[in-house]
Image 1 (cartoon, rainbow, N blue to C red):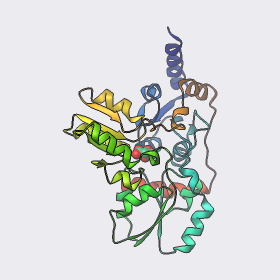
Image 2: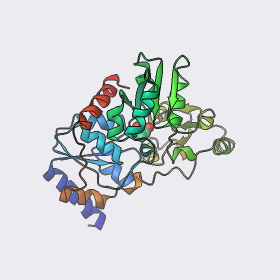
Image 3: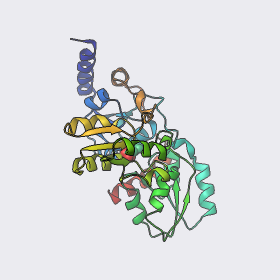
Length: 305
Ligand code: CIZ
């Protein structure tokens, strides 16, 4: 047996012994996706965490994702193998700032993207993911929306509701924000027949040039349905693994080589093994923040996608 095979066998043994569920985000490295019980986006993984019957949830993703699992499943032990995997986008907003914005716009509903801390979620009326942000805003009777912390996603959502006033937070994802309109034009010239799919966390000038805009789950669905034989993907490179596995007949390229989230790449098989063996890297959220954040997340799950 190779060292890797021994590690995989050990993780399988510990997973059973600890009665653990392994959840992995679409942006995780291939070997982590391959060992997970479920791979998906934040919406899907939140549903899986909320419905888990296992005692331990190993969350292969970044901190706000494991925190969301801990909020939704407070009786479980939630482990984040890469304890230092943060999200610079989530760091753009803190709870005090949200209270200040709410005081400035008292009629507005606060919609917090799931890429936010538990404290920020606790200040929100409802959460959303990129898979259901439009549906979430549609569900609200408010004429004014504070959308945080991703200004690019907020801009994209706002474009669907010209009748509403949006107050957009000035945050962005360092990975998606990196794509430029020139990148899209260059790839269009290289592959004139290709369909270009981008994430709504990209800048509005990039979104405007794309053939399709959607969350990771929506991009995965679109690739399955698209008649195009060549597809260019403008989101984090982790999605390419599942796409190539499921569509060996299609040519699938990443829009730009810089589409790597360093935090998503911190999870390794060794760290998963360590977390399971020692039940370490636990993520918890103190009451009453958890209860308030739970309400905002539950409203999001009730809207569906
Ligand atoms: O919702 C998520 O999981 C994120 C961060 C991106 C996506 O589109 O899936």
